[in-house]
Image (tube, rainbow, N blue to C red; front, top):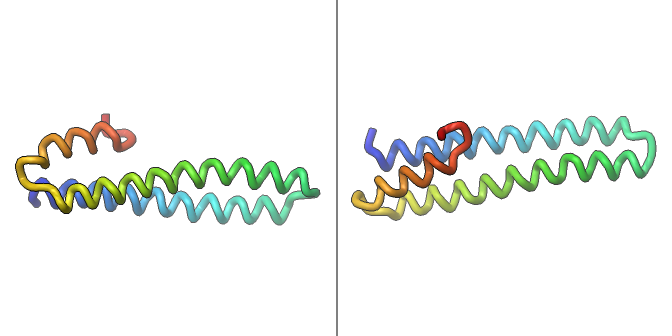
Length: 93
């Protein structure tokens, strides 16, 4: 697997992982909303999950931008791009 393919795979895998987390959080939010006793409880649930989902969606958008950058990069740009991606990805430091 080439460096470019490896970077693409890393970013796609991480994006898929975050997308699944977003789906899970939305399901949890729906469940908690159904159990909420009043509008204040619903608002608290909405706020709690909205922040988490927005943060993950921002990470997904950034990963997609980096993926486009990888796809458009030349071979001599890949080493520095790899370092930036490795530093950015969670748990890879």
